[in-house]
Length: 218
Image 1: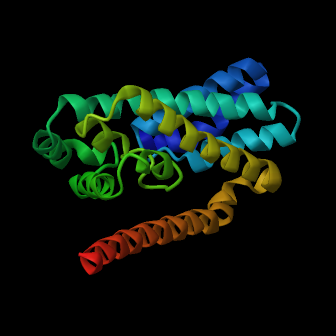
Image 2: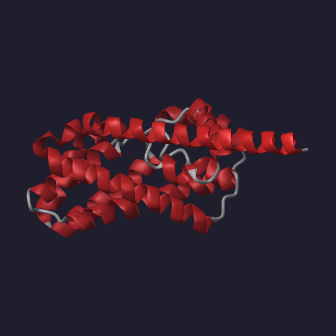
Image 3: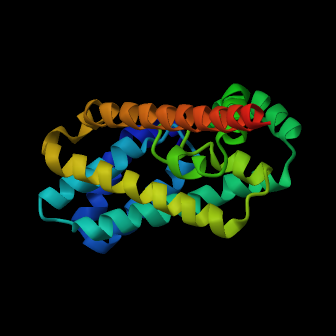
């Protein structure tokens, strides 16, 4: 089964698991989110809102759905983090040039996530988990930059928890229209980007003012 087939059948697979047993349903959501972090074309925007829909239907419970998604996400981040630590960036770019299309990641996307990490520091591991297109890839530069494992896990878990709650809540609120969650979540993602931009601009201005004051006093 290739990625496109998995995407098509994923709602049915999760639905069948929930119908069989709620704990199998939680386990399937966990596994799906683990795979979502390994293969970015599998969207969290489909998996977690579907879990929220089943919460609304009374077949699952909110907290276990969120925890299943969180555990799958955190464990799914480890392989990319490990690749970043073990493989130098040039070799990884060459591999993505030849094979990246099969997992939906291009060398340009890797370079962009690396630039973001170098520019904004380790806090981006937290904020990056809230931005589609960045949330999975941010684990690679964290590994390349040899970010300690414990801070990586803490920041990844914190950002991912917020994302799991947002998506599950959206699925609960939208009900049978859970597949439209991207329309609901897009303004939130844009707001987060604006907040990040304002924060970084403010930090830059603060640094410039401190330098100016020192030069003026000198």
